[in-house]
Length: 299
Image 1 (tube, one colour):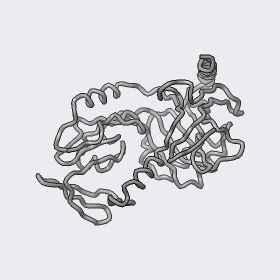
Image 2 (image 1 turned 135 degrees about the vertical axis):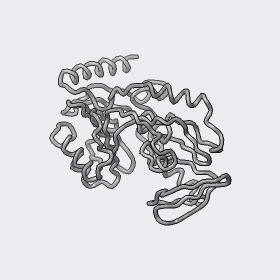
Image 3 (image 1 turned 90 degrees about the horizontal axis):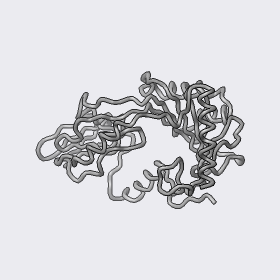
Image 4 (image 1 turned 60 degrees about the vertical axis):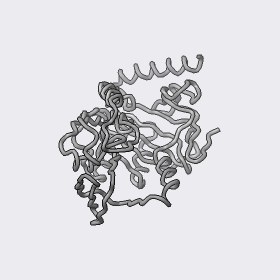
């Protein structure tokens, strides 16, 4: 049975399906030890992690929502930070953990990030669930390098994950309205759970859109300002290859973390979530999924 405790999600597994929602391959959550397979028995959503951290420390930390860093000036004893809201403060240490699109990173390390584009554009949001929805996450791939997945989430909602394999054309800099229209036009006339997903997208307030890229930085600290998380060395938007939480920005990151980041930067994008471009490619992939699913179930 699917269950949730403190944000922890006990998943059944993942199904690869056809346009009429017929099962093509099934990967049970407990099929494989560890978390290197296509699904995991225990999962926690990023939003739930953020909520758990916030609930644990909100009485002891100052949270400023809806604001951003406008400028930083540092000397030997601290960093003066000016915010977009016109507030100012001085800190002993500034840790930047804003992700691949960090604007604060560019204030401290202007022009130093040389991104490597992964040729995948994605959108995430949640939609209302329906009684007929499966307890399994469902993955559907169509032609044109497009794919989508629906995953059971909290409060009767489904996480919708959509992607397309394409060269970047500055889509991450578009307005949210343009990004929503882009996704709608890509998927509205497809089979499977479309046009349900684009229609529900019009009403959501948690729409997220990005163009996946690696962050390539020659350094991860500058005086009392330090980068962590995806900001200094992400291989993809949701997978960090940066070092652990720093204790001091005055110390350089250990060399072994840099070596790990450099190894991960050599990995190429396989566009696994988006799928092949042609009908023949989709047929070959479906055959492979079916074989893999049967092998895992019989193992």
